[in-house]
Amino acid sequence: MNALEKRLLNEFQRDFPLSSTPYADIAKRVGASETEVLEALARLTASGAVSRVGPVIRPHSIGVSTLAAMRVPPERLPEIAALVSEYPEVNHNYEREHEVNLWFVLAAPTKQRLRQVLSDIERRARLAVLDLPLLADYHIDLGFEIKWS
Image (tube, rainbow, N blue to C red; front, side):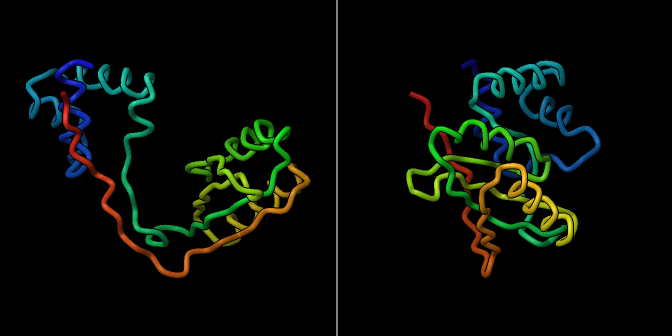
């Protein structure tokens, strides 16, 4: 990982520039070109060091969301995980070591659309989906300083 990539990972977990040219703004701050910043982010994404660049919005500030879970037979897990990930409303989808083994978060513009996606997943998977809506929200800052050795 080069110096620019390390700076991007450490310095922009918070206070991402809110402008029409955020990557140009970042480039100016780190002394690189906008193209170099975009290329570095593409490399970090391709390597798996970055899963996405985007805002974290407080739940239910815009639209609605829910946590959902499914009990999936192990032999069907790759198939069902791929099916769930097809929906643009799913913002992450992961396996857990438990009999209820596939968990995902859905965000949609309306409750109707949220229900529609959950029902569609149930119908296509032929498996029940547990809908676990948010009852209370807690803010956990997931920005961590990375110590390079």
